[in-house]
Length: 337
Length: 222
Image (cartoon, rainbow over all chains, first blue to last red; front, top):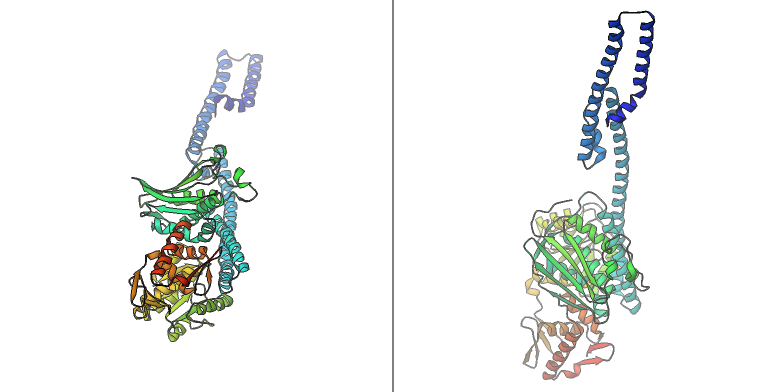
C-alpha cells in the first residue's frame, strides 16, 4: 500500500472536508466573528482530520504489509487465511473472513478431486490385479499347447503385460501417498531378473548382454526399480542396430552408487536428448513406423525416480548409442517425498 | 511322484496349472472349496503348495501363517499382488517363494524343483539315467561303460536340457533361454563353442551319432 494510492482513496473525503471548511469560513466571515475563532475552527478541523487519517494510514499500512510479507514467505499461498494476523479495523476483519471462507470452500473442492483420483487409482490397481489372472491363465494354456501360433500369441501377451505394467505405475506415480517400500537390494539380482524377463526377444534379436561389477547393494524399492530397469532395457532393445550389445555395470562412489545401462543402438539426436523425459515426447526415433513410441516410458521412469529419491540421467550420441545412469544415494536415510 | 496342491480360486487357471504340472512329472491336486482351507491343506499333506493370496474366506497370507504353525511344507505364493509390502509379509509368515502373476512358467518349475529337492533330500536325483549314458549331477560328469568324462557347467546344462527333451528338435534359442534362466547370459558364439565341445566329449564316449544337428532348426538327441 503506497501513500498515493491510500490518499487517492481518501480524495472525496478530503475534498468534502476542504469544501465544508470553506463554507464554514464564509459563514464566519459573514457574521463577523472573532478573528481567533475564524482561525481556530478551520485549523482544528483540518488538524484533527489529518491526525485521524494518518493513524488510519499507518494502521492499514502495517496490517497489509504484514499480510503481504507473510504471503511472500509461504510456498502454499492458499494457506494465507490460516496465518493472516487479526486486524483491528473492519475491512481487515472482512478480508480475513472472506479468505477463510474461500479457502475452506477451495479445500473442499480439492478434496473432492483428491478422492476421485484416489478412487480411480484404487480401481486401476484392482483392475490390473484382475486382468493379470486371465493373462496368467493364458500363459499356462500356451505352455500346455505349444505350437507356432501359441508362441506368437505368447509374444503378444508379453506386450500386453508391458502396457499393463505401465498403466499400473502411471497410476502409482500420480498419487501423493507413498506406496513403495525402500530396503536393501542386490543390484545383480535386480538386473538378472530384468534380463531374464526379456530373454526371448534378446535372444531372438541376437543381442549381446554383458553384465559386470554389479555386486553392490542399493536402497530402493525392488519392484519399482525393476519396472524402471525394464523400461530402459526395452528401449535398448527397441532402438537396437545390427550386432547389438547392452552393457550393464555399476560404479560405487562415495555418496552414491551409479548403475549404467549402455547400448550401441541408433541413439538420439543432440536436439532431442534433453526432452526424452518429457511426457508424450516421442522424437524422430519414436515416430519411425516400426517403433511406435508412446512417450510415456522414460517420463514415468523419471517421475518414479523422483519419488524414490534417486536420479536418472541419459546421454546419447546419434548412431552410436545411449547410456542411461540410475543414481542411488548411499545413505540409508532417504528423503521421502 | 510328488504331490503339489494348488490353492487358487480361479477355476480355469487351476485346471491349466494342474495339466501343466502333470505334464512336468508332478501329481497335481487342487482345492475346489475354500471353507476350511487350512484344515483341507493339512489333511491332504502335499509335498508343496501353490497358494494364492486373494481367496474367498481366509486370505493366503493368513493361511500361510497358520500352516507354518503345524507344518514345514514348502509354500510358494502365487499372486497378482505385486507390492514389496505384500511380498515381505508373505515371506515373514513363512512362505518360501513369492511369485507374481503372470509368471514365467520355467522359473516356477525351477523353484518348485529346488524347493522339493531341499525339503526331502533323500529324493535328490543325483544321476539321470538316459539309457545310453548316465549324467552324474553331483560331480558334473557323464558316464558310459565305466568311462567318465567331466563336463563344464554349461555343457552339463545343455545336455540335461537335451535329455529332458529327447527325440524332439530343440532350437538354439530354446537352449539359450534355458541357460539364461539360470542367469548365464551366453551369446550365440559361446553356444556354438559349447555345442562343439559337448559333441567332442560325446564322441570320446562313442556317442557321437546321438546328437544330430538339424540345419536351420536346432539339435536333436536321439
